[in-house]
Image 1 (cartoon, rainbow, N blue to C red):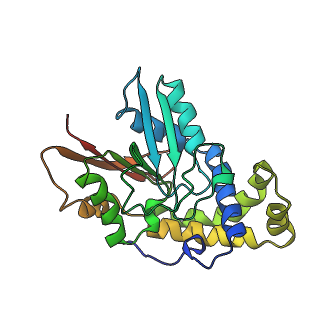
Image 2: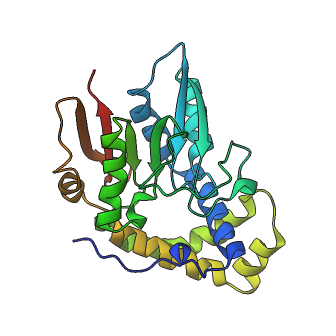
Length: 247
């Protein structure tokens, strides 16, 4: 059963520099998982070789796994262009194109086009808001892909997060003395990232809950696909949801 506790990153009052430091760590953490490859393989089913494929990433943070996913898609032979968006835009965190204005994932501006993606961010939204995100894509007949890196059945693995923060922080780029200070000398970041990581597991929608979110979004010309992806060697699967116009 999903438990929606608070995450520090979600709070409007949370210091911007700390939020950016947490997002920068997460972008590095994805490099040691097989998830970007698995997600790219799922995205490829919505794309066409030989033409430009546009992605519109929602709730992007510091871009997270997006650069790695693009590399995988290019390796698979797809020409892809992405635009990052967020409620709290962080353009300095990534060389990828980043929409400079805040974007509400429930009401995406009509001038922002492309296959919508959400990587490890859907769990941040309460059910009404999550349903609103899916409804906006459904009503406009726009493909949307929701991928999670967490699972409610894997919450116990969050105990490893502080160790990973200590090990992976030197890989964060661009280098920041603030990141080093609040990781090793004043260990605020390991505590914050541990808490938000644990809560992310507890907040993640199960496949059954994803099915319930789409229950009223039915049409012969739009199809929903959902299930679990199994990262290599992991004892648990992570949920995903894909909505696409029928061909």
